[in-house]
Length: 288
Image 1 (cartoon, rainbow, N blue to C red):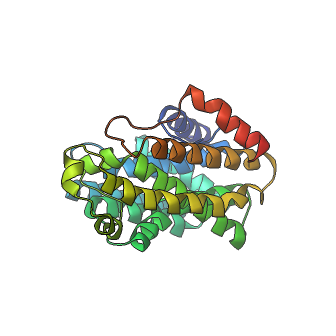
Image 2 (cartoon, rainbow, N blue to C red):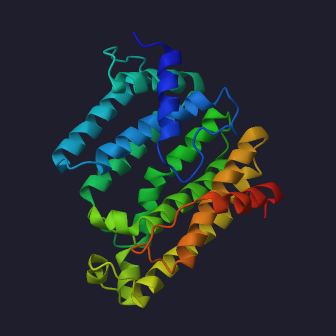
């Protein structure tokens, strides 16, 4: 039988070894919260990989996500398989976290519905369609972090939603080339048509003025969401305030880099590096 301590340790290792743009279970958070954040991360990261990684056909990916949903419901009811598998370890930790922190299972269900959508949907007609995807793929994570830290406030939820959506959108513009190779385009078709952009240019790895116009519109709206949600960090106290500031500043820095590159992620994918540490830290400390 997997002990709670062993399960949480495994989740923390996953959180610390998998690449992310933004802090995950970082040392900015209180030590007591890090295992719970790591359990949330392990659940979401593994499910996202089901939808995104490897060469499995859609039916196999959907079956794995269905199994993850079934395991989620069992864990919420306090039942976890004890077969020693990686899944059993993740859900051993998650079951304890759901019970201890009184987490809404619907938020985990929203995440899984978004991952299923990634398997089945490759294009989005309108901006509102992209926002609906973000509502389920990103916003639940922010709300769950707030719950883990004992915040249950509708105003904070709304501000967190804005930041989480902005982070997800930033990742879309950063990973335009990667998502394109997987058959997905998150720039809404209404923007593409309005700019006169052609998907054949993406297929050829060309970032044209038309695509820059479409992405510029998307980036402007993304920046507005960052600014709208900025106050979530001011609505919390202690270490969480610093964690949220760091997450916000890191996301905005990535968006700055994508825009500065003229959205040409085909030449190089903008990512955070050593030269970004000081600007991000300065923004976090001065909160500008």
